[in-house]
Image 1: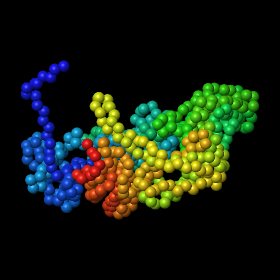
Image 2 (image 1 turned 135 degrees about the horizontal axis):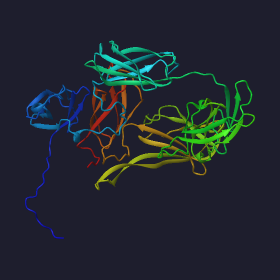
Image 3 (image 1 turned 60 degrees about the vertical axis):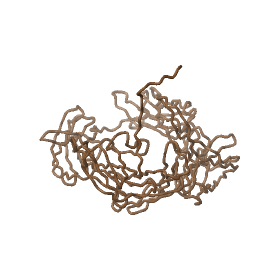
Length: 576
């Protein structure tokens, strides 16, 4: 291989050197908020001139930032041709900075965060919630159908809005169509009277928007059932061979028995029985220990457990109207399930049937260990005392003693590793690594055990209990927050960890936020939903800190805490 010089081949890269940091937040009504901060000092900048430039380079809107570094622009979405917005430009003296307007590669991706909600719906779109006073009717009954219609941003005045309702019967035929003018409240009601000869089955109720006297968008729908009610002519009784009204049972060699009788008490012999078992993944939860959380050693968090249905086929009752069958649950002994046994018995003539069922919590474990804390384990201020009460119970929920247990306090830390991506390039990723910080021997008596959690150092921890055979029998997670150094190697992929002191707050209350960052610096905390409701700037000289923001007056419902951080220029943490 020989090197060859190729004349005229060049490469360039645009680099902007500026002290003006820009963050743009677009609201649901298409307005936008621009925040300007000094990268050097970490403080918001007042008096910065911010322009939205059109394609012709002329400002379509211009404003100066307030003392908190914020400026709000009205919507420019309808601008066209030379006035179509292309860039935000900020100027302060000789300093200049810019950010493209609504360009995909400049947008932040929130898909990996807990941001459930309506997606890809315009703020002015309408939503309808349709419901009835009950979900089942007899032929001849009158259905009372109600619906509530609201604009997604709750701003529209919907009085007089033309709405069309439609009822479709079980044959997929339209049996009623009514037009309604929506009242100011957005709540309306219609009725539909079924006939005694109306077909049985599932009916649909649809609500449409009317435009130009024609049916337009489907806003919402619901379904109801119309059924005949006939008295049963048989009685069925189902029983399980193993029962534990309060605890759980071992699924191995488990059987079910069925007793079928006619309405007047005589045995219903030679009747066909269809049966099945439905298994749903379950956890250990008991009314007797309602404040305790129990650990399932057989649960693998990396595997997704699925519901299972076992078809047990058909059997016939004997001369006494009884039958017994094996539930075939041995292969499910390595997991915990909520088991429901269903039996359907058919009359001797015709297709009418009755059903019976029995249920139980099934697991092959001889005992489980539960814990109850004296406070929130997800948010513990450093050095604050916090304890957990441990208890062991058998399958009958009797408290038992456990000896020769090993308790490990495990620190959960993240390390950055270089991984090869699908496109062949290499990138840093944070990988969880668990380190045993403390080990001790202990025993749980029949009365239980109180254990004081170590809360001296900020970080994420796990208390793990193992029996004499080194089998994991309990696992308790807790997080300690506070200012300081946390061994969390997030420096290569710039992740933030944010925790709130509690899940709900009142209007006017102060929210306490624990922030773990890959480096020290300054940032912006906002309370958002369809727009920015509150903001506060903060500075921190440690990678772990606690910040606060006040819930604004009049704010109700769900909201999001958004944190953006800028690395301090003198931060000792390495970032490349």
